[in-house]
Image (cartoon, rainbow, N blue to C red; front, side):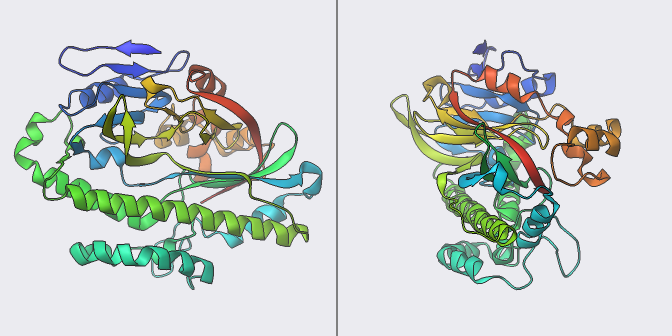
Length: 401
């Protein structure tokens, strides 16, 4: 662990040995550490890279205030994984049919216009059942903020999205089959995040000049919007958890239809956020912990750390490191922006990098090429004080939006 101390700021503790941390990310971290309500120190994970306002791969503990842009607009984004009773030998030799079945079962991507391919046309019954558990709390939110009612909410429940969101079929070190997927609160979470980021900036309009970054605008506890934001962000995080569970069920069902046989798929199931805020106890005090691209890693707690679409991923168990606020990285972390990746690499590069994976290999996914990410082995080595590896997964099928 490295320590960065700057006069007038809370300390910054970084688990980044052997991995790059660019200057822009360091500056963002120092900007956040200047805020008066930071508790003890910031904790920085090895996948750290520049984000909007706050740095991705950072753990931000606060007392008496909350920063909506630190949580961001992909509220509750996270991972779900489940080991199955299948082995590699049970999968078909040609995996294209399995990928196609998953793509058909899980809406993904986005098209503009009246019919978004990433949303349900007719919402299936399982999604409607999950929505019924969320609908009452959503109405309480939209009664206060009616502009959130006309968002993609019910029709996005059980859908993947695009960007770095994915569904994967993986094999572990014993050639056992796992399903793993990555997504969050979709359109409604984006709308909630955007709304409250704007409200925070509007509320602090006269103080924005004193902030190191306008995206660090915050709500103080007891202020006009604080409780409403906590309510809305908590709801979006629950939406995200339901969303992942529905897609996991759809992925299992699609695989059963392809294989034509039953199998178990709830062994070692894990469902964890990595973009969220919640109240926790640390160092004897209740604090609000915002994990922006970080996973909770309490003693014995299971988590998921994915690599890129061509690299391995890890099922981990937390070591409960108090100095990290019991956290670990949420992935490998980018070293190239999406624009840089598209400028530097070609479709042929993408094909070579993912030759061992049944996945899309076209210009639209070059920004997700493995070389745009940090070396996942270096990332894992840098956080050996935070987690222990239980399983190492290699993907054989990857579905992206």
